[in-house]
Amino acid sequence: MMRRILAAAALAIPTLLGAQTDTSTSSFEINGMKVILRRNTANDVVAANVYLLGGTQQLSPATQGIETLLLEASERGTKRYPGALARQRAAALGTTIVIAPSEDWTRFGFTTVRSNFDSTWAIFADRLMEPTLDSLEVERVRARMVDGFRQAENNPDPLVNRLADSLTFINHPYGFSPAGTETSLGSITLDALRNYRASQIVTSRMLVVVVGNIERAHLEQLVVNTFARLPRGSYTWNAPRAAPRLGKALVMREATLPTNYLIGYYSGPMARDSDYQALRVASAVLSGRFFTEIRSRRNLSYEVDAPFLERALSTGGVYVTTTNPNATLQIMRTEIDRLQRELIDPQGLERLTQQFITDYYLKNETNGDQATMLARAQIYQGDYRVANRFAADLRRVTPEAVRRVARQYIRDFRFVYLGRPDALSRALIDQF
Figure (tube, rainbow, N blue to C red):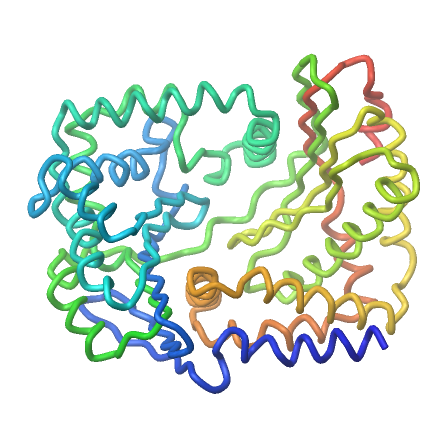
């Protein structure tokens, strides 16, 4: 019965996403810039994103956060919308323009209704193309961002995740912070910011993805009148290099908290590698087993996971908040050993994969989420249509492949621990 319910739900997902009956996806290129349109006439919500390619590969220790600072400062005035006008017009339209820096790109986008699309696009485009970058306004934005970093130091989850990336990817671009650090943001000059805008906001770095009830001809005209006027540049996307195996490590930071935070990362295969989906499934298996054994049966944690980070270079790991990290680590080690030693029951794998596919699509049902799915396929695989093969690729993962990738990749963890030092056994950490 459960399998039939999950199968029915999965069959309903494409219709929910508008991929079968009322959506067509197409692409075109203008001045070196790829534009993807998924037309969804089911409603009048439209999501538009520009993906500025490169992410942390654009950065150095001194320039971490420069693109984020530039885009944040663009809200404080542009050529057509000086001063507070850009913010006021966007607010009047009920639109929020979102900036989301990440390891492989910076997403700059908005979601609005069809009737407000053109007006929002005008503000959106001008922020990217013609920001004023007034010195006083830039300093205000810089101060706000630095203050945000200082506050984040008191938030355990972002802190341990940032530290874990830094520890896992030493001397690798993923070790940089795409949002910047307090030190790097403080050192970026106004001239550096303006030079970055002039040299790096080019069409060869831009992927535009729009999902919603917009006609292709109309979108093409908007792009021609705005982004296509930018310099082309000579940027070519390349996936980051594989991370070197640095061996096991532990960084401990003492903190008096109601619970202890522990996260360990390892680097996995590239997105183009056939092992990518197998490791995704292996991580899902571990997450389910961790939840059952650690949370449900023993009540050792309210939050436990085996994360899989979707990047050009995948990252996997273990994560838990617990008052008893040693007992939790012992269970995690047991479950990892079991995954590396035993073959998963094929029928159990089929059920888990089907449920994972259903959950994944339900979590990515908004137009904005669909845009990023298409972007990820285009950037990582070179073809947005690969997104349509996601479910089929997962179903091809075999029990043997799960065991093999578990043995190959799930090892040499780089751990970050935040909590009471006397509650954690280093000997247990060394088993990972």
